[in-house]
Image (cartoon, rainbow, N blue to C red; front, side, top):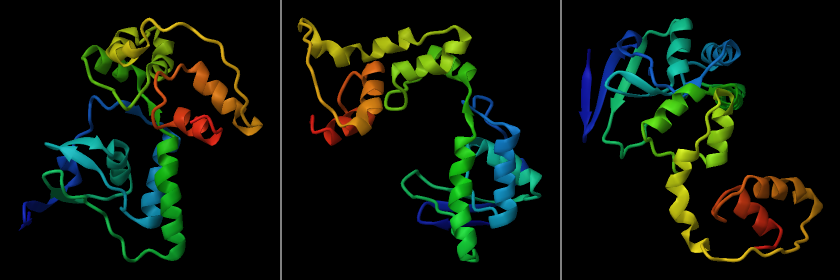
Length: 209
């Protein structure tokens, strides 16, 4: 086991077996998802990164499984203070492999699903999802469990305080046809603030901001 210290950055050789899956992983995977990651390792190498804390995988749980499936046993662990970005650099990729790597990376993410049971457990534990989910999104994810995220919604009450006492008003707006569905979705979802995101973006493109 070799170790190198570079201005607070520790680089250490370890084994894949030194890591464990995150038992509280909010993401669930399926065989097709797994297959894409394994295929990517065989085709473009072990370019996929992971993130761990004290040997527990926080990001890359599926990659950990796929590396084992592909026969990868060696790990180069880089420990930092969180102020250094660790980049996996593969210099021997062909132009085709470089293009394919981007598809593999994104496709494996779109094939994964959220684990609603873990989300509910984290909500009940008081985990702050601010900036990650809106209340309606949490409700959609947990609806099949017969659970609503109303308690979590109370955390956003302060954001609506400025609207207290205001009377309802009916307005008519004209939007370009190509934005119709996006505007309807934005209104239906009840976005509470015109903050960065689909709501603000659509309104700006429609000339309403």
